[in-house]
Length: 195
Ligand SMILES: Cc1cc2nc3c(=O)[nH]c(=O)nc-3n(C[C@H](O)[C@H](O)[C@H](O)COP(=O)(O)O)c2cc1C
Image 1 (cartoon, rainbow, N blue to C red):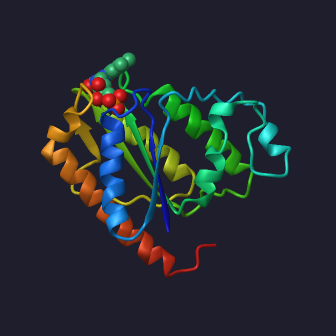
Image 2: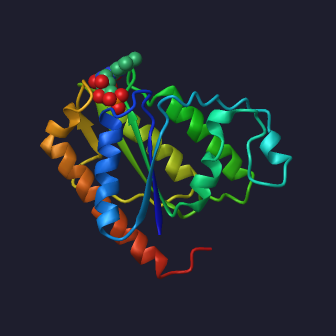
Image 3: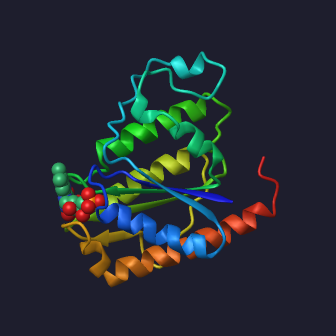
């Protein structure tokens, strides 16, 4: 089974990428195929609300946007999806939301391919706002009919400069436990009929 981890930070190798990779490492140890997709350097355009995705056969967004190329396919192929975002003024980053808006809308117009995939959110910030961002991403999962595992705390961590998140021992432990619970849940779901 595959898990796609996304870092919605514009900073390559920053705290969000480290946090998401921490979860992916645990999942890889448990035998899952993992992939980290960083949105750093990918200026994903926002959804235009044009409804073009409802008029085409294939699950796809009709916008001409090289930065978004392949992202729909990665979501479709994944059994589990981890979305990490830094907190920017109390919110997920524009990159994260541009991606989720477009994937979510295409999914709705393509037999809801997100249905019953396992989704987990991770929010990283210097000081505050993680809960809003955590909730924001979970709202997306829940109205996309996805299944959300938990941890011993909400999946949040602290750090400002790139790398600082590694010093947040409780945050890292929370993320590792989340990954263990995600693996457990995905294995259980794999024993059942998914559609
Ligand atoms: C535009 C901007 C807005 C930010 N807003 C917040 C905020 O609301 N709360 C907070 O605690 N940190 C805030 N930060 C700090 C980042 O969340 C923090 O540096 C985080 O570790 C960045 O993650 P990254 O290394 O993955 O990019 C902000 C940073 C930037 C650049």
